[in-house]
Image 1 (tube, helix red, strand yellow):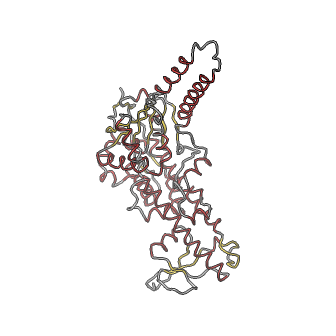
Image 2 (cartoon, helix red, strand yellow; image 1 turned 60 degrees about the vertical axis):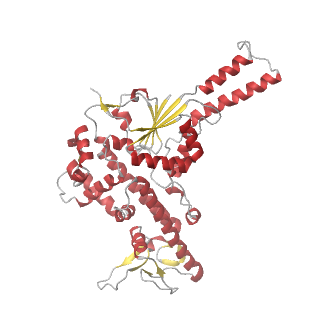
Image 3 (cartoon, helix red, strand yellow; image 1 turned 30 degrees about the vertical axis):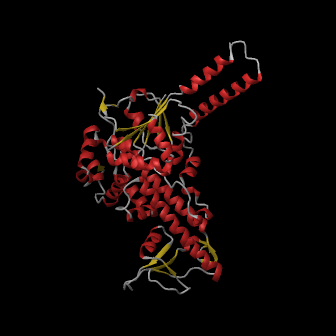
Length: 441
C-alpha cells in the first residue's frame, strides 16, 4: 500500500499561496483597500508580494488562471468589518514581522494565552485579598498595591485582546494606562462580585473561531479558486492509495487523477468548514487551571469531527497478526486440534509470519515539518518494524539542504538517535528531494 502524508510544503510546491504571511498580507490588503466600488483582483490582493516573491508568484500565474480570482466588493466590505472587530487579528497584526510560519503562529497563540492567564491570576489575587480588583493598569512601574503594572508590550497585547480598556488623554503622561474591561465582570459594572475568567476565555475562543472563519474565507475565495490549466503528476503519484493531509485544501483531489482516499486530519475548507487551528498542548499550569482546552488542536479535532484516525487501522492489523502468531504457537504447544482446512501448524505459522514480513507499507511524506507539535503522528509512523521488518518504508521529501537539516533535527528530537539510526542503517528511512511536478497533457 502506498500512503502520501502532506503538509503545507506540498501546497507551496504547487505554488499555492498558503504561507502564513500570504494570508496575513492578503488580509492587510483587504483592510487597506480604498476603492469601495470595485472588486479586488489577484494583483490587488497580493500587491508588492508579486515583486518581492516574484519567482513564486510568477509560477503561480503560469500554472493557474489568476484572472479568475475576484473578491466581490460586498465580500471585501464584510471581511474588512470582521478584521476590524477581531482581537486575534489585531494581536497577530502586531507580530506580523515575527511570525513566518504556521508553527510560529501557534507559538504566538500560546504566548498570548500564557500572558492572559498570568493577568487573570493578578486580577483574582487582588479580588481575593481586597474584595475589589478594578485598579488602574499602568506601563510605568510602581509597587503600590492599588494598581497593576504591565510592560509596554504586555499592556498593548492585553489591549488588543480586549482585557484592558486603555484611557486615551490629549496630553500623554509618558506612559499608558487603563482599566480591566468591565465587559467581563461577573455582574456588569459591579466589581464586588469578581471577574468572570470563563466569560473572558469564551470571548477569546469566539474571537479565535471568527479568525479561523476569516482564514477559511481566504482559502475559499483565493486558494481554492486557483485551478491548474493542466492536471499534475509526479513519480509514483498514480500509485497512491491513501492521502493523509495536514492541510485544509483540496489540492491532491483537484489536481491529480488518482482515485486515492483522502483523510483531512486538521479539517477541510468549505461552507461549512471544520478547520483546526490552535496550540498542541496546555503546558502552563495556569492555563490548565482555567481549562483553556478549547484552544488546543486535540480538543478542536474531536469537537469539530475531523478525521481522528491516522495509521491506527494499519497498526491494528499488524497487532492482530502478531497476536494470531502468538496464539498459534501456544495452541501448537498445547496440542489444540487444527481445523480440517489447515494441514499443519507449520503451515499456519509460516503463513502468518509471511503476512507480517510482507506487511508492505510505503509512506511518502511531502511538505510536513515533522515538528514536535505533531509528534503523536510521527511516533505512529515510526512504530512499525519494531519486532521484525514489516516491509514498512518511509520516504521524506525535502525542499533544500536547509530543510533536510531541520527535518533531521526534528526527527532526532522526537524519536531519539537510536531509532533514527536503526531506520537509516536498515534502509527503512530515505531522504529525497521534492519530486518534480509534471503537467499532464
